Image (tube, rainbow, N blue to C red; front, side, top):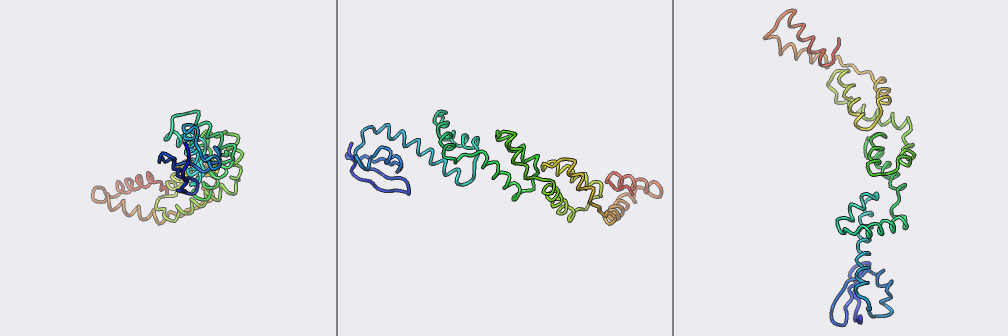
Length: 242
């Protein structure tokens, strides 16, 4: 089947017009592999189209990776949207690895870097996120060494200082809430407690406001000693131990 004409349709693809006016679109690398520019003839169209299909899928994956660095599991999930051929998926994965496009070390490094600069996630959460992506634990732990004690405390204190500015709770309630929040963010109880111990909050103002609010709330129903005890109990429940 003779080739009549080539028409470039994108950076890497050509539309090929055949002698019977049939048209096919092939990637440039496929054209070069089968020496179609030299031969100007197609002998085994099915083989060429099959290889072009593989190349198209590989090209899709490259575009997917170029938008954001991906891990192997993400790429496999992406490929399964387009094919159920596990052999083809494995072939593409191996090609990505051989071309160093898919590199576990680079992914882990980039993942940790993004978490450090774009979030306040701690090393425990980051480690678990990476393990859930099926990376080897030793490799993850090795890359997480960037989280030295200074960086950990800096990030915890950054979070605490931001929360202090809007805090209206008692010292006790605030510190317990911060402990829970920071544990969820992926820091250890030991590191959180160390930073919290260095914080001294004056909750006198919030105490007085809460006390006044409670007296107003219960003074119509109680009075004297009973009112005092009710207010004192409610303040205690809210973490005011004065």
